[in-house]
Structure formats: C-alpha cells, structure tokens
Image (cartoon, rainbow, N blue to C red; front, side):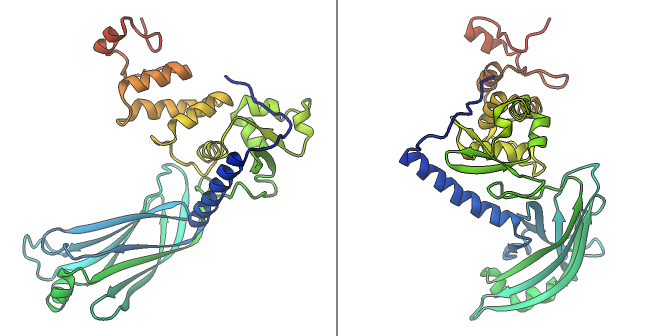
Length: 333
C-alpha cells in the first residue's frame, strides 16, 4: 500500500490548472444532468407494425434508471391477426436494490408528436405512477393501433411520428437510493471537510471515509496535525480519479466498469479500502471484457486471488506453460 502525500501546497503548473478546470467544467455539467428530476424518453414506432411487437429506450433521471417501451398487445391471443391490437406504453423503473425498501413517486406524461408538414403534439395520457420494490413497471394503454395505423400508415412508415414519455420525479424515499451530490460544494453534516487536489476542493464525510479506509481513519485521527487543519492537500493524484472512487463507495453507488476498474484498484490499494478491492475483484472475475492475462496481471499487482467456489479462472494450463511456471496468485493445494 502506498503512503499518502499530505504536503504543503505548491505552485501548480499551467497544464495541471487547465486539466483541473476542464474536469471541473465537465463534472459540474454531469452533476447538473444527474440531479435533474425531469427526463424524457423518445420512441419512433415506424417499424413496430407489422415487423416487430415492441421497441424500447432507456435513460437515467435523478440518477435512477428508467426504460420506456411501446408494445402491441391484445386482450386475446389473435396470433398474426393485428385487428383490435392496442398500443401500450410501459414505463419501467430499473432500480435494483433488492431487499431494500424504496419508493419513487412520479408523474408520467406520454404524448404523440406528428412531424408531418408541421409539428403537432398531443398528450395521450398523463398519470401518477408509484414505483417500489414490488411494482417496477406501469402499463398504460395509448390507442387502438389498427385504426390509427390505417389512418396514418404513410407518416408512420416515413418515421414522422414519435411517442415521448416525460417522467417527473416527485418524491424518493429509501435508505439507499442513489442520490447525487456535488462534491465540490460543502454540505453541513454530509460532506463538510475538504481535500485540496491541485487547487480544487473536494468535500467529503470524514466519518464515512474513516469507516471504509484505515488510511483516512489515521489521517483524521486527532493526534495527527492533518486532523486539526482546515483542509488536507492530496498530491500525486488526479481529482477526477479521486471523485470516481468516492462515487463508487458513497451511497450514490456508481457502478464499477471496464473504464474505471484500474483507477479504482489503484486508489483502493493506495488508501487501503478492502471493501472496494473486494468489489473490484468480483468485477474482474466476472468480466468478459478483460482478458485472462490482464486479469492475472491485476490480481498479482493488487494482491488478490481470482478464485472462488463458483469461478476458478486461474487454472489455465496453456497460459501457465507460456509463463514457464504456475502463477503465485490463486494457486491452492
């Protein structure tokens, strides 16, 4: 595990300042979009009849994943006969915290937009939708499709009709809902202590970090000079990488991905965060996007095994023969 460099602030290079400013601008815009409680999902039904039964699109609103589908259905099984088919709009809340009580109250409006000649909008349905652990979708009948298609076949075929679902989040209640905070802004009793990284202040919750990291726990201890300062300077780290780590371990629960796995492993090792190392290890084991040799390199570099009861990927004899010896990581008697 590497040590933390908490030195006095020094002059920043022009390149470091520019890099930090670019990150800060992008971060602020990302947070703004993720904090927005209103979002839209847009679908064009031009090929839904008679070639396919449904279409779907996804987006995140207030950092919560939603999906919007339009689907042709009927109350009776009519086989290939599309008479009396009804076009439904189906909105899914793809929240995946199983076993955690959560509830999301929303207003959902679905409108049809006709782009033929001039843009015309018509609200078809406007309903209140409550999503929770037992109810993750709302199914809304929109119109009788065969009659609508017969009257509008040309504009549907020319992709001049859209169905747009607008979802407005009214209330969120849960112990572990992934709400997004702007970590560059202090919040009393939430994120109120700043790290200074290349001139940019990132506000954290000291108790939360100390719970996960022995390095931060030591850093915040009352017998160290850092604990009595107004801020702590972190060097040899990119501010965007540090925030990426915080967003994964914080209740916002950003997902581990192929894009951030090496950043997370590096910082989990640097700051001694066993729970994050464990999550990264599970991701590496299960990932189909990481080569076997890369998995072994990561395991050796960050001192974890690639073995569990359900998944043993190390015993690859051809790879071991190429190396000339069995790897030291994850070999069991």
